[in-house]
Length: 169
Length: 116
Image (cartoon, rainbow over all chains, first blue to last red; front, side, top):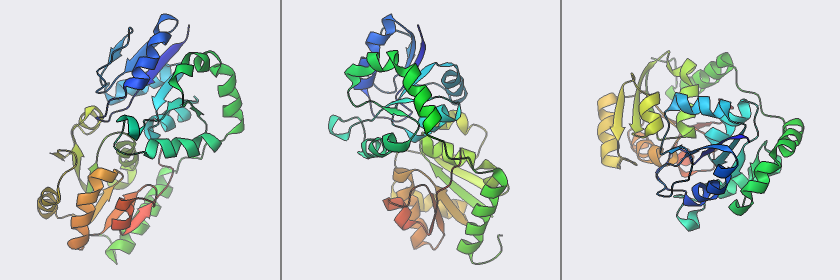
C-alpha cells in the first residue's frame, strides 16, 4: 500500500477523467484526491481545494503524486526528489481552456523527469511499476538548477533598469 | 519603484512568489484572481481581486490608481488586458515565462529563468 496524492490543480475547469480514474486505486492504496471543480468524487478522502501550505506538505508526504500537467506541481514534486505521474488536460474534452497541457507534456516526456500517462485506464499498472521507472528517470534525467536569489535579483534589476531607461525610482 | 504583480492560480503564482527576494525590495501591489491558492498565499499583501480575466477597462482603472513603474505577470489570460493597457500607457511590462505566447508579445521584455 502506497500513499498516493492525486491533484487536478487550482484552476476552474473540472478534470473528471483523472478523478474517476483514481477511484480504482482507492481500494489498494492510501489515496487523497484534490478534485477542484470536478463533480465526480472518488471513494476515498478528497477535497475540492487544499490551502497552499497543506498542499506542499501533502506533496512531500506522498510516495507517488499523480497530477494534471501543471508546471507548478510537476516542479514542486521534482524538487522534492519525486518523479510525478502526469496526465494532460485535454481541450477537446472540456478539461482546459487551451491545449497547452497536451503540447507541454508531449515535449516534457521526452527529456523531463516525469512519467506521462495518456490512457488513464493504465494508472493502476503505472502505480504498480512506478518505483522502478521513477528510479531510472531520476538517475538519467537531471533537473535544471534553481537560480540563486542574488542572480535572480541582478538579472531582474538589469531588465528593470533597461525598461525604465535609467536608474530605478 | 512601484511594481504591479498580476496573477492567476497555479504555476504563475508560484513564479511570482519565487521572485519575492527581488520584488520585496520595491513598493509592490498585486492584482489577483481569487482562488484557493491565491487567497491563502497572498494573505497580508496589498491585493486588488478581479474576476478572471479582468477586462481592459478594469485593467485601465487599476493601472491608473496604482501608477506602477513596471507591470509583471506570468499568467497568460490575466496578463493580456494589463499588458495591453500598459503598452498604450507606456508603462513597461515584463513577462515571466516562455517567449512564445501572446502576452509575451505585448510585453517589453521576457524573463525565463528557473525560479523554483
